[in-house]
Length: 130
Image (cartoon, rainbow, N blue to C red; front, top):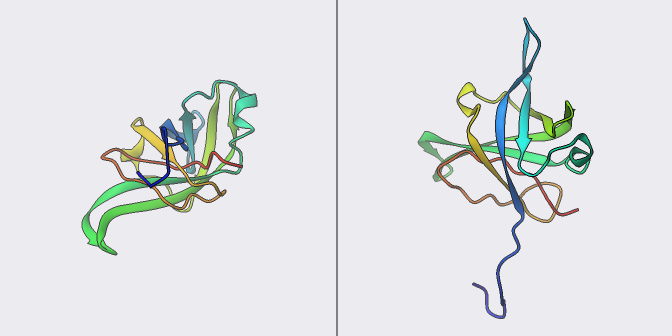
């Protein structure tokens, strides 16, 4: 801990699950992913997350920039239905391995998440401040 800091640190992340791609009966739209954010249960709750940035973190076999972890950035675009699921668009489409896994989102105090701590599971970032 930093000198002078007392008590617990403020938690600036929220967990969520990547559910899949947006789809209809016969079509699948890989450019839009569906994410269930923990604690978000209504369409009204989603309004606060609209426009916030996300980062899908995954572990690769080879090192790049002295790390094995890679990141795909995205943004919450709008709600999907009435149960608190959000639609998110990523810079490149999410891989199918990301679906139905536990996720953790973490962020700094600006709109763009700057520092993400890596764990074994996938991570997506949503800025909670501002």
